[in-house]
Amino acid sequence: MGFKDFFDNLLNKGRHTKEPVKPSELSSMEAELAEIATKPEQEPQTSGNLPNRGGLARKQMKPSEISSMEAEFAEITAKLEKERQARAGFGRFMKHPFQVLFEKPENILIICIPLGLLFFIGGFIYLVRSSGISVLFNSTSVDDFAVFAVLICVVPLAFLDFKEQWRIKNLENALPNFFRDLAGMNDSGMTLPNAIHHVATADYGTLTPHIHKLDNEMSWGVGFVEALYRFGKGLGTNLSDRSVDLIAKASRAGGDVSEVLRAAAKDTFEVVNLRQERNNQMIIYVIIVLVAFGVFLFVIAILVASFLTTMATAGATATASGARGFGGILDLFLYKRIFAHAAMLQGFFSGLVAGQMGEGRFVGGLKYSAIMLLLAWVTFHFFI
Image 1 (cartoon, rainbow, N blue to C red):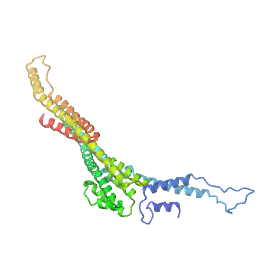
Image 2: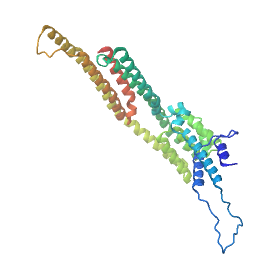
Image 3: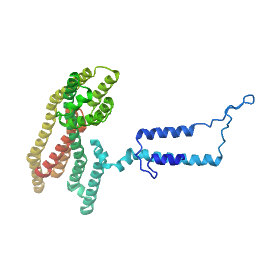
Image 4: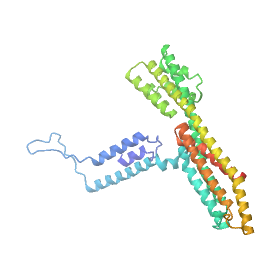
């Protein structure tokens, strides 16, 4: 069997159905091929005074054989590269689009940003073709398309981020109890697999399915350290990764696992407590940002309804009667549009500031941004 047939079978290209190549196997195969390609030919070292003890001399390869091997090597390398691209980047997205989109909240922007741009450009072209270029100056329809294009981009990301943070919060709140109960079972004389099996019968909220998976893997013969690393990877939080790494390293070093579990439980409990205290202290600043935006909208509404409307009416009356020095006609539509833009911009960026202050992440403020942007649009579109 030549190199080509061998690697065809490894990549499931042959006639027999085999399991797909794992990323680790793919990397090792690439390394072996590179080593074969760069390894120099070893000529037998013989001397006129020394006999050839092996009795066999290495056969010199013909140029045609070298060319054939180089062609096979190039073909194998191309297949490996194609397989690697299918496992990451755009190739992975084309192969598993929904898995990639919902793997992380920010991945949804792959779809939302093109949809938002398409919505805005399509609306802009429709308005210009139906009403002319003057629609940009005497109508707020373009502003409406821009607002909804931004909401198309922001709302899905804000919703998925809120859902993910809620999941992480519930998982991390249940971790201290899980580690503490596991340490208590281990202290009572149970082995770790038996302790995990017993603890898996309890209810830990969103953490319960992950504990069941950990119990199943250990019952199938997976080692405690390996199963624990898979458990932490399934949770996907920074706090769980740190706790799992601490427990796994202590277990490998041969320490008292019960004490390490208690230390991990104490550490996670303190981190969750500190985070909760920070959120409780910073929530007042988030409320201040939201109230300030509400006050801004209220002041603009009063200003437009009482002052600007009166000034526009008085200016129109004075101009019609021929009076001079009043300042001419006040363009009320222009002022309303300027105030609307100011309110929507302030609402969007104030939401980002609220998220940074309240959660330490500006992405966490996108939900406030979407709410305040929509509130500003509704206020100016229907009430002012």
